[in-house]
Image (tube, rainbow, N blue to C red; front, side):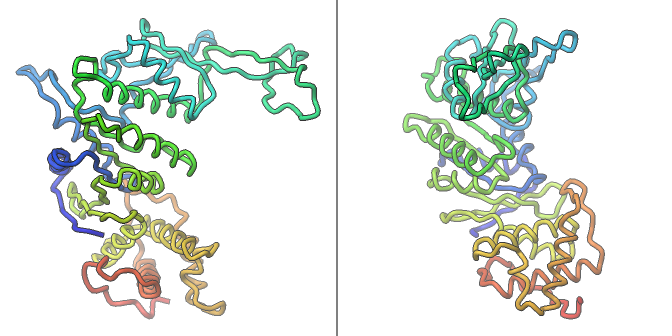
Length: 399
């Protein structure tokens, strides 16, 4: 892990990112949920605004994707008739500045076909999106019940394709549609010659584009995004932040000249630490281990730290080819401490502990935590420079 710099608040960090983008094209940030990634994207966007004397925004420079982007889309579920469901678009947002261009629908469809099997139509007059889906049914079924997986021994001619209009897609499908909508706008911003509806875009800020990605889609989305942003003719500067480890690592490899950072808190109410991950692929569990070590040294141990410790143990065990994290604790089958510590982590890492409302550990659990952590660090050859100072005294009689 490289150098670390502390910033007093999100605005100060956002200002630094803008300054760094004067000489860099891409910045990649990894941070856990709850650190402030979404608020950082908002602070970055706000620094690009220029207002008039009445406080009205007259100029801005950042096209961003974060949790607020999804709020620009809202459902009209036709509660009265339950038939004409539509996704409404917020007409007040500059996000939809180029909606009247039918090219945007073509661009979205080309992107969406990578990930989904539903259809859509944008009504640029009423500012809404209507979805549809085709499905197969038996011709003999008067109710038209979907049967997408017909038995192999059945005659295919017994089935027909029907189309359902004005459907409500799933939450995951809605998310991928919004993501493709955003990518289509990015394409327009990249293609424009300074005269189109997105000529104001100078920066792109993307925060956690799609939640709960499986590994295949994490790789696919990261590869596609990197390919789009690396267009040689593009002059746009981009920041991408995420808590998804695989997504981050793929972007690090694809955008290999990007600045790569690990973002964490410094212990003060608003302070943040930005650590350079270096040129090698980034493994966030190493940075998490350094954070746990520092938390243990300071005595600020909270219940969610057991969840973090378990995640580190699991990744280390997987790297060494073991099926269970207990392999990183137990030395022998009759190791009573190892068995006890495994059971403790199993119990204490299954609580619904929140980073937003941290609860301090009980003193007894702190002693166990310290002993497990130190034995793990001493047993595995981690780089000692990860730990800024000498470890605190081990609690050898914690058990």
